[in-house]
Length: 373
Image 1 (tube, rainbow, N blue to C red):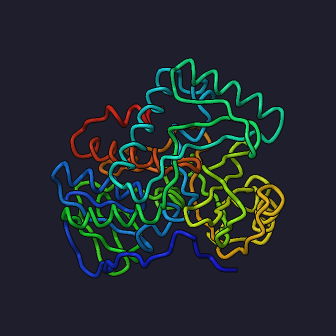
Image 2: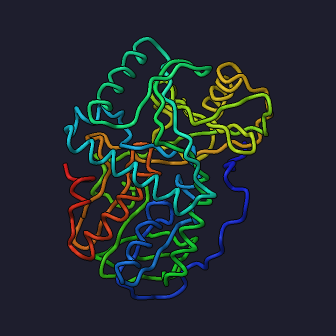
């Protein structure tokens, strides 16, 4: 079974692997959206940066996700209010809306401001949509009731869609122009104090920022028991002129999701919960049971008969104890961001910038908002 995302339509930018011992102010591990956002913020602060990745630019979940830009945390807004309080939940939500706007302004050819739908898959979920709408309207956050061909639910007009791998490439090019040294195919084998050992080189840094999502607990054992990695799977079709899906769709409590790309292809993911035991700690390879269920949704729920041309998987990290992401110092000089509970495209960029300022400048205002327990 192929393991190629629909987003990989152009070659990744070429960067060498590390073959020497070098020194820098900050070493960032993980060259996905969060890590690259962190690197660009560090460069703006005025420090030297080395970034490494075990594979390629956006080779993990950052370049292999569903291409959704969703405001807020992974939890639905009313659940976030219940968990962390109304004021904090609203502040985070508004920050993520502003981040989507910022991304759209920087990358207009990559980001589409089309909104998103939360579609109820049961009467219970329909009732939950109404509770979410009440909570959002109470805090003057944009939301509308929705009734259309997809079903009943909510329209979130500030959300969007994007090409996640192209975003990573764009961020990497900006980082390189800003003076960062980037190395691909360079896994971090060990972090001792603030020295990072790689297969053929070593990085001595003042600070280390670990910006991987899937496998975060493997690189930082301090997070075991708090963070656990799961596999997410997707497929994509050939262009389908018979389907029209104007905006991304989240349904069945967010477990299933799809969108139609500008060229007419349908990208569909989900069903992890139906095979949960097999998806924890699983290798990032598509599996037959999940792919079969996704294909059933494609044919029966969406109604597409287009040929399936792509199947892929990625690893992401989930927290067992909080709806908040990991954004903290885990040991002296070593910081971690990740565990976005499956929706890191927007909040991850904010976490990257927050940790950059906290590590180098000691400014923890944004970090406290996003990661403080």
